[in-house]
Image (cartoon, rainbow, N blue to C red):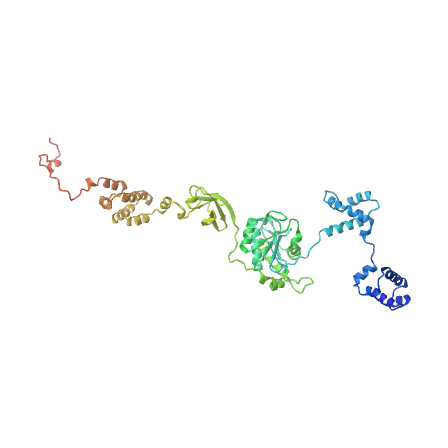
Length: 514
C-alpha cells in the first residue's frame, strides 16, 4: 500500500507513466491499471493518501465477495437445513453436497461447499476471551487417562484417577492421584489442593462429575450436598461448568494436556508400589511444571501466583473439613437411635421417644437434631451392637437403675439415719453379689418414707442386734412393734399366783412322770 501511495503522489506531481514505472520498479501497464482504478473511484488523491493502508487496499482490491454471487444466495437459504441434517446418524458433508448438487447443478463445488459450511459453523459459536481476577476462581477436573501403581502382595496393577486443578489468573496448577472418583476421595483431593495453595478462592468451578453434581443442568444443576457442606466450611461458592461446555474451564482442560506431557510422560517408565510414592513423584514433577517459564512470558506460574494471587486468597479455616452424612431416624422406645452403617446405638432425651429426628454424622462425631435444635451429641463409636448412652437422656427410673451401687445406697442412707447407714454397710459386707442387695435397699428406703423415724430407727437397731438385715424382717418388726417393742411407760401386768410351776427339775428328768 505504501507503493500505491508513492504512485499517487508522483501522479499528483505530474510525473509521466514511464517515469513512475521506472522509479517504483513496476511495469507501465501496472501503473496504468492503478490510475484507471483511481479514476473509477472518483476520489481526489489527497483523500486517498490520508486513508489507512487496509482501507486503501480494499478500495483498490475490492475483489468479488461471495455474498454477491447468486450461488451464495441459494446456499444461504439452505444453511439451517444442512446444519440440522449433519446431526442425523450417518449424514456427512459429502452426502449433503451430493444432494445439493442434484437440486442445484450450477451450485458450489465440494471444496467451496465445505468452506462456506465450516465458516457458518465457526461464526455461529464464537469464542470469548475471559479475564480472570486474581484469587477469584478455581477450576477442577479429573484427567481422562489414569496413572497406576503395583500392589506388592498380589502384583495387581491398580489404576488411579488423577485430580487436576488450576487458578486461572496465574495458571498455577495442582495434581494428585486418588483411589477413586467417589465423593470422599474428590473432597479429600480438593482439601489437599487448597492446602497446597495455602488459601481459598471465592468460586469453585467443577465439571459435571457425579462426585460434585447430582443432576446436571445448563442453568440450575443440583449440587452434591457434601460438596455444598465443603464449600460452606471453606467459604467458597460453587458454580459448575455448563453441560458439554469444556470452554467454560478451558484453562484446566489445557492443564490436563500439560500434565500428560510433563508428568505422565516423564513417569511412564517408573514403577510405584503404593499411592503415596506415586503422589510424591507427581508432586516433584508438578513443582518443576509450575516453575517452568511460560511461552511468550518472562515469568513462570509460581512467580505470578506468589506475586499477584497468593496474597488475595482467603485464609484456610482452623479445623479440617470432615464429610457429613445425613439421615432421618425414629427414636425407639429405649430412647436410642440406631446408626445402621455401624450397627451402633446412640441415646436421645427420652422426651423424643417415637419422634423422627435428623442425624448428621462425620467420621468422629454424631449430632442429633429435632425441630431445629441440637438435642444430643456423641463421639462416633464403631462397636457393633453396643450402646452409647448419656445418663441425662434417661428418665428418672432408668437413671436410678444405672446409678445403683453400694456407695450410692450408703450415701442415700446417710441422709436418712445412722442406724440405716450401719445396717446397709453390714448388708453389703455379707459377701453376696451387690446386685442381690439393691432391691432390699430400695425397700428399706421406701419403708423409711412410710414410717416414723423413731420406729424405723428402732427397727433397724433391733435388726442389727439380731444379725438379720432383710427387708421382710424389718417390715415385720415395724408392723408388730407394739408387741415386740412395748412402750416402757406402761405399768407392768402382775401375773396371778398358781401351782402350775414345773421348775428346773422337771425339764432335767429323763423319764416323764405324769
